[in-house]
Image (cartoon, rainbow, N blue to C red; front, side, top):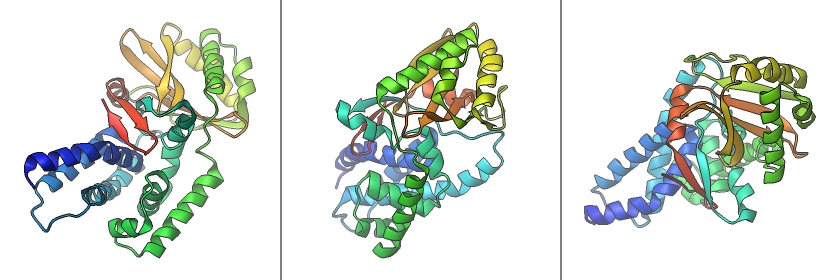
Length: 305
């Protein structure tokens, strides 16, 4: 197979590989590097003919990600403050009815929960439940028996279900929260916002140690409301607050002219009340987010523009 043909095959597979790598790593740049490494290995491969290139590419990409997770873990142990996955401005290549399902595997809460799984549990779960790969193929990727892969995916599935992080409320409910949060920022009045928070809601921010931001997780409705009214509403009083779709869900962007100073996303329980508030303040991650838009599909693919 010549280089042009191999490149065409790879480009067809790229969105699937990016969707997988981003969910495994929680980092856009690391995912792009893993996909690029996969391309290099594919283009330079000279062995026996590969019967199913997409499966081969998926295996190589997954293993590139698993290798990267080893070093990522040590880096996050030393991370200053709270680590939050990279945010992606999201568009959809799916019907309105399918969007909630697509979003459920991209949310900040879901990606953070994956961090609490072992790398192979994470891979088995994503490959089977999100990308629909059969366990025979997953066994080849992870170099395990199919039965072991089923167990890995089942444990991960149970953990995800127990923590209920894949629930995405209807867009009207999300927009209702954005309105309440913006009102709290503009006026300092958290009455409406407080009505949408759970008693045990929490707030965390990712600054990477590069800008001023709360380093500890703030726990409890009253603590969160006090922080929003007495700190955030003052700090962001002169900035513009706009809405957008981040990682599949409605969120807020806080900016001054063309510079984004914060991106805010949320997670909800099945009653539509807020469980977690995530504030991205890391300037490097925000700069990347400002130039990164992803088109998400029902198949799990993620095409970055």
